[in-house]
Figure 1: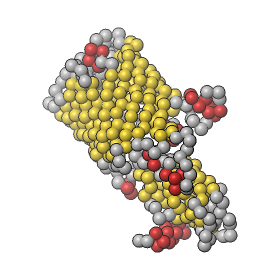
Figure 2 (figure 1 turned 45 degrees about the vertical axis):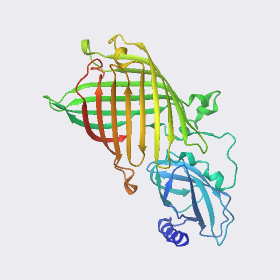
Figure 3 (figure 1 turned 180 degrees about the horizontal axis):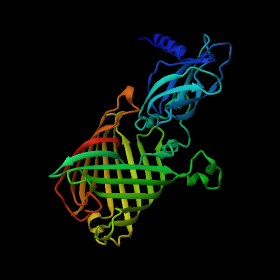
Figure 4 (figure 1 turned 30 degrees about the vertical axis):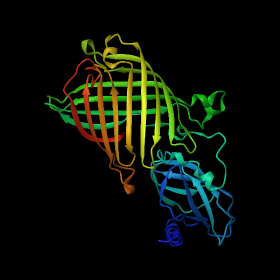
Length: 380
């Protein structure tokens, strides 16, 4: 289909989606958008209104609304005008774009994951003939929602004599909004990196009577996050988290496990190409309190290495390594089950293999037989 016919087709859809008294219709030849890259669209006024050089608009995905600005790409012609708009790189899913200062139709578009598109965030400036921004570095975390993913979230099941499930829930919460009142205070913008994190990992014995939870690790944390930072046009992104973390299993007596640590976690991500990335993160920590388990450092050591390689839309391999005599290795292989038309639902097919000491906090000093499990995940 030619671009002209495609625009006519999308204009017909816009007419069908327009409110009863729309002042403008939105149309585009693009329907699949890499978030972080520019979207070219056409605005057609229904009356004699003059279209300005900039039009305020918003992107709607579910309950979320993100403000954007349409910037003219040429003069108006034949009662229409072309615009460019850069989509925030963290958006994903089926969404709509509409004008905010005048009634308009809603343009239906599909956003693919923006993390791998982020190196192209300067494309809009280049298309408009402008030089690269002199600052050159973008803080991608400013576009994160206040409540966001932290560590992987999954539910997997396997057997090595008796059947067990292992599942993990995790999130982080930014305490101060970068665009909120705190940014007006002295040093307020620096405080917006403060986060509260929480992760819970449980092993559930599905074979024993009453199906008890064999052990659960509760892991709250307070930390500061820098980045991820990416230089415009670069395939590399860097970030750092540093703060305090508590881990305990909530048990009493001989089964009680508890540690308090200070940690620093630098991370690097490399966009190998438009679909594939490689990432590495090294978590370094020191113990503030390990009274319940004084020898835990002999098994858990002082570092944890995570390596990731794969495709955000396909297979992804993640590896956690404690490379020491009493360490462990965990491999997580997952495949995206979301499809273009159903990207707000579904998740990932997830395979997990663990070999070494301390699959749970209770068993930090025990090495059991290797364990393979399979299940699903919603964050990987």
